[in-house]
Length: 69
Image (cartoon, rainbow, N blue to C red):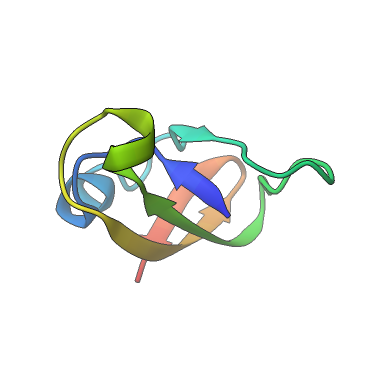
């Protein structure tokens, strides 16, 4: 699961239309997709970025955030 580098899901939604800020975590190859749906989370206890832990499904199109659920 990709780590989303945002303090909250609200901040992630505010970045619709922008490139995704993320950290890869998989040992088995990249999880990031320029087009498609990604599942990720904010893990403040691991990254030290602060904020709350959250999970989100992010729809990407042409390398930009299209939607967040």
